[in-house]
Length: 379
Image 1 (cartoon, rainbow, N blue to C red):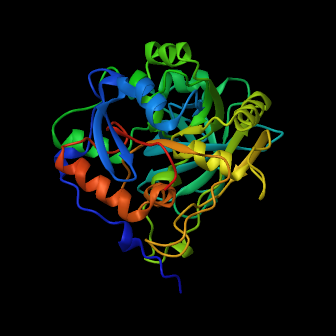
Image 2 (image 1 turned 45 degrees about the vertical axis):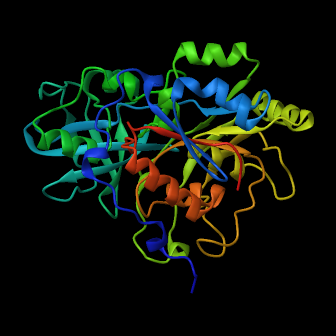
Image 3 (image 1 turned 180 degrees about the horizontal axis):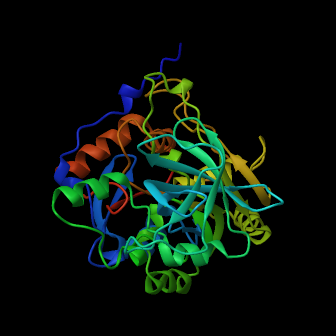
């Protein structure tokens, strides 16, 4: 039995501090600097100065360039004669290997379970059927999941451009609906990082949402390199633990890619004594997954990770043996979540929960559209 408990990573957050919309400007969000002996309060636009003062000269920024799919689709069941039936809401998760069709694993929600062979007719954003775009259930899996065959003669991006909706986190949708609001006109822009380019995530790597092109240019002018990895964020990333014993938690697999130039840049930074700053927990998991034991530079190429990083021997004791990441930029995470545990493994559970309490007292905004924190060193 592990001495670690999910209850060690719980905290109370007032509902009004849960951000349901982004800051007026990306880099106007607040930034909590968490150091060994306390915290200080800044805005994200202060980042270049903070990196120089607290991380060290010319740290290497590593970002996740995955782009969020318009992954939510509304469909209706379609009979062989073309008659339309009940509604089925889909969330595209990931492609699967196939030689005969474009095949995707999806989560679905409907009043009656799907069956193999069921045809689904996508609906456009006005609720009208899209002709010639039929999807077919190839396999039904447990927990509301299935594998669908998509039309092979039409690019998926074309279908999503016509019918896809942004998969905003459910808590944002729920709170907006309760307030009589819907999606915001700029969600499609603001729920993507400005450097997103590789389509494949169903949730944004949110630590990167605060960067602007101007801020990136300012960092470059200070001699701060930026390189990318790609980790396609799946829905399991943000799930709270179901069991009070974290060692029983099984992470969902997520695909990642490390370009050779990123691995080479990390190797150079290591040789020159410069720090590696991960922008977000997805970057941490990517770099640490791809780095063999006893090494400090990740191997380039594609891979898959189920890495679960948490404090090793209880909330106040051992630390996870990080191999690559020296500093971390991250948002504020859900109670009892694997992401909060990762941050606690990096900086210590007591220190992180104390910082969260101070952020709550100072009225910081939490979760995906919320504010950020900078951990300039492992502690």
